[in-house]
Image (cartoon, rainbow, N blue to C red; front, side):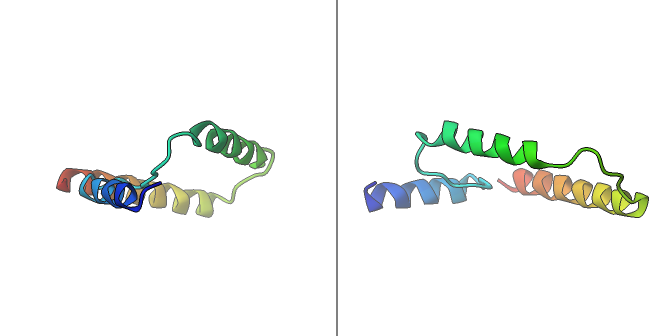
Length: 74
């Protein structure tokens, strides 16, 4: 890819406050497949400690709030 085109894409992503700046769309299906494999690897048969579960819920909420605030700045 032309360096100028990559630079323009990066600036566009920064201005748009995009969490990921990806210059090529042709890899989307390959990434989706790899991500699907990762999701399938998560164990589903294990108990989660209630304190850890509570902490993770708070962490997810904080992340959601941070994303919402970042989106409102743009």
